Image 1 (spheres, one colour):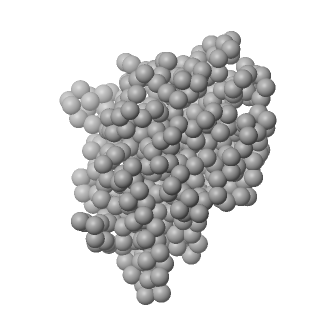
Image 2 (cartoon, rainbow, N blue to C red):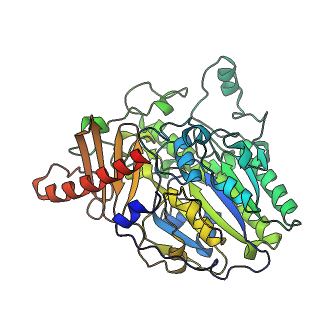
Length: 465
């Protein structure tokens, strides 16, 4: 089941013996997974010089940065279900933010469950699955902070008391540890200290909510950025030639107080939202830095694989959109960083990879067999040879649309009763911001036929499996 699709695609799989001469301190290395909600590659290490993300940038300098990593579903619950089970999404699986993997993929062992079976102590902190108790038996411990306010201002607390949504942003003058994210960080540090005295390896998954809405971050992180210097999206309009099906009302953000129920946001509000997103990223970066510093302080660096991953990207006004839920690059492309002892340091790779590939990669890195159901392919070879090739394509879908990303193109189709009713094609070499849909141009008919055939094969595969 799991390899037939990829052999048809001509992918060459490289299986390495053992785990690349990693640490000998334990039989198996520890695994620290840092999952960040709604984080697009808006980071200094991805060339976004305006961003203040020193700790994630430092991690990038200690491992391998994946420049072409893509999410399978641009919504949190579905993306996480796909990621943690190693299964592609399909028209009947991993559809919305509120799915449960133990329902959509019943009977399938997930990543923490597989590691637990092989001697790992598995811990979920914060938002790993959308539902904390999803595949509950896979975790030895589950922690989400209770009783910690999401907002701090009286105005927002009053709105909540009235049964309404608070504002889309807030800059409270509070300490980091008084927030939910701060509590998660404190628990992560505690878990690391406890685990350092145990013989069994750990799988510690730390899930940060921010920069998910609302953009609530301590004021000191807002103060890192000058509001009047913030750049807004240069393409706040739907791509030329894009079908009407591509339009999107970003209802998630509109549910927050102070956001217009229809139409664009004002220039002032636009800047405020961008400011809030950046502040939230820098806040999360600081907390990640504390966790990574603890790894070093405890002498765990040479025994621990560190993976930083985001469930999907986010729109910051590009194409007139906010949030995610579209198959534009800004919603699908994700940051992915891997630091593995004994492998490449300070390298970048343009090899194409998917979230669904992380499960098999972890298995290879720590010397475990793969469960038979996995549909992704290990990219461990790219950690040793970053200049090597990645996948031929990666696949993403959301509700009524399916998309594939190749080394150059992003192609999306909308189908009804098996017939293509709309499509988009973007050439990322010529048009990285996706401002011109070229799918209907005569000179690209051959490429459209080729990509449509690949996509049809992928849809057939995921529907059957």
